[in-house]
Length: 221
Ligand SMILES: [Zn+2]
Image (tube, rainbow, N blue to C red; front, side, top):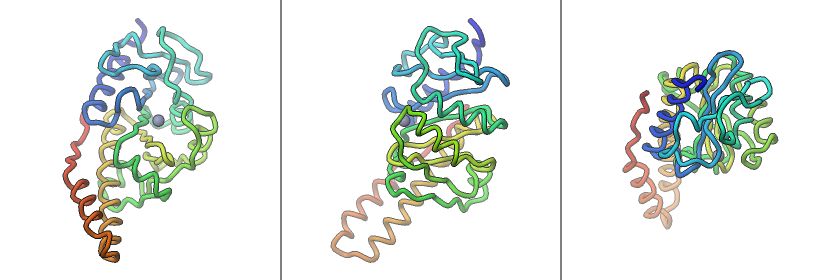
């Protein structure tokens, strides 16, 4: 089997993301660059707890021609390929439907990043990419236009998030940092709203308590 160890790394990362609720059921996918010419990507519609290294697809980065693997690659392969081609410095691209960041995409606004350690990982701002249906070249083109050399996290409107990194570890850390950042951002927005509107205050306070009850653990490979 070609590139066995990096294909196994895709399996291990997917299980970790599923364990933390960032990959739910078959939702979410990721790609790793093996070298300048090849990427490995999660297969389409696969239960991550059943997936093996052989199920992981090996593709040529230039034209996404299949090099190894029997399964069909993720529908979001085109989006990952754009990231890994345009951001030549990045080795990993992870797309999730992680709960809080995905909820934050409904606001349709970029999220500022204020903490220095988050800025090092995510960039100064998490940009919002306008809506386009999953798995379409329309979505990957919109993301490609939004990509910046110094920004590693993006929100996809009414859909989810995508993070990239110079290593698998940094991309995973960006995913958990983004979840914590969007939790704090939503908490501030809800608190500001609750302070203004007394009839809704109790409901908004319950929402705040729900956000506070979700511990976010750092993803470490
Ligand atoms: Zn998705």
